[in-house]
Amino acid sequence: MPVSPEPAPAEAPRATVLHRLTTDGVSWITLNRPEAMNAVTWEQRERVIALLAEASADPAVRAVVLTATGRGFCAGADLRGAPAQARERVPGDVARTIRLGAQRLIAAVLDCEKPVIAAVNGTAAGIGAHLAFACDLVLAADTATFIEVFVRRGLVPDGGGAYLLPRLVGPRRAKELMFFGDALSAADAERTGLVNRVVPADELAGLAAAWAGRLASGPTRALALTKQLVNASLSSDRATAFAAEAAAQEINMTTRDANEGVASFVERRTPEYRGY
Image (tube, rainbow, N blue to C red; front, side, top):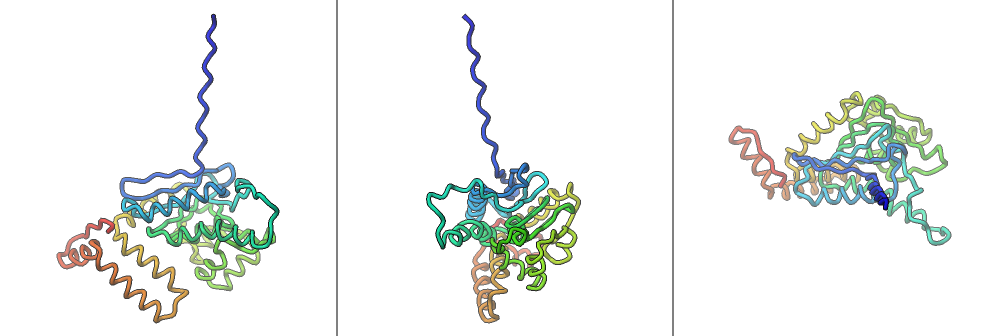
């Protein structure tokens, strides 16, 4: 009697966010929907937020790289994967969706206690552009573009765009980008200060790894406090900023790395930072 063949095992669903932690303490977070230019879904957003929170809390993580597969870094928000709404939309729903969605994602980057590098491999549009701009350092492939796409759809920029852009390039340049929605090349983004470095596409991952490795070998708590001071500086008056600086230095001097940095200077040797 013939034996029926066993059914082939079902393929595991592909991860839409890839994650790996390197031996030198770098958390690589990679958006992985290349067929959709990495337009970010609800599930991807929640996964990235969770990974950034984990990076903050994990002493083994010393730096984060945020990047993507394929030709797009992130083409904006993909709302098709959002949970279905149980009722007709009423006033307040949109604002709540923005607060709990796009704004949480950008806040997760800004509030991450480890330095975050964006390695922008392709198109960064809408929330995708803001995701890159929220990072502490931005590296871009020479083929990358940045687009404030909202005006093309008749929308107000969200995901912190009107907060981030004026602080990065000034209000007039921010308005130009947001009013017209023109694509900004990687070279132009570097000239305006939105990008730290532009390199050929095949060199992007290597440069991101090199920069992240340098950060991962640094005084992690000092970097976290420096990030907080800089992010708050443009919203602070001088007295508040000076008080925050003094408090940050007071906190930092309780760390092993700060004492190691001072000792290594006195002893004329290279410091060995451990991240705490």
